[in-house]
Length: 370
View 1 (cartoon, helix red, strand yellow):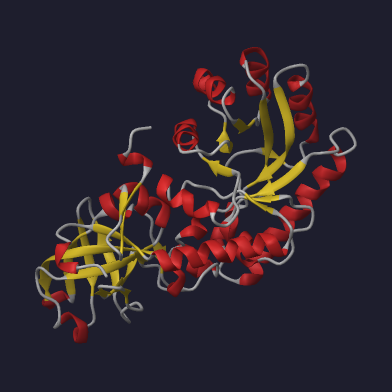
View 2 (cartoon, helix red, strand yellow; view 1 turned 120 degrees about the vertical axis):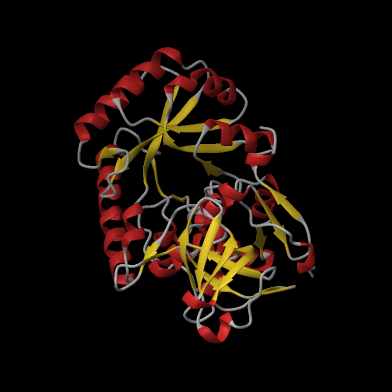
């Protein structure tokens, strides 16, 4: 049980029970479809949390930077994929880590392939990231000419082609299960077309994808070998409104001290700005942006969202919360309110550490030496 009286400043709370249930959910999803789960660790960024994954048989992981890869390698992970177009300015660090563990990178351009061909000094597996409609990074999936050129350039070097990856991030823009399924099916079709085209020359190539909505919701993973979701470990309101999770599955909540009460406008101000929550927002039916749901805290968890309450505005340290009359009259300066985040990944990065309801402190790489 957590003594709430000990919380004196913004504190990110972690419900370990919910987190463990989320891990079990995705582990079972991967097992059901006979695919490997190589989860993305950018959401939790914690060596302590990473150990929980070992209990579910996870052996390979995904990160977003060489810095994050070094951090988790230091804590015993030896099969790591950097799911980000490789930053060639970090070639010395990449060579160093690749000589110690199995490090897989993304090669998405001829320029990168040429550079690595000349400069890589240790075996370096790589994926070609393909763009299946999200338009963030990756080679357009039907541009087989560029893909063939990248693969040809990688020949006779330390580079080792392993397959194709896609992050169908446009599932996050979906508002229905059917929209997620449409994007997912389009991604599957494009990835499997690439497999059919390139498998004669690369019979062991693998396909992987990484968006949490698809990995949480879909029942068709035809041709997929690896899934790399990250947000599922905590979930959040963005995922909830896509349909990936229920509000009850959200495993993190920001405890925010009330610093002023304004009944004349049905608002309270808490110490909970974008410096704590991040700047991500969602938009309601009348195009009004909001930044989190409001809950009440107990020593063992938090309530369902207070009906009609939400985070209306953020500045750097201030959070302005709208509360309905019947709840507002119960709130005083010095109280604690809970905020369910719109984007858990951003909130965790901003806060740097979490507190469980058993009182354990969970630190992330941002507050530990890498």
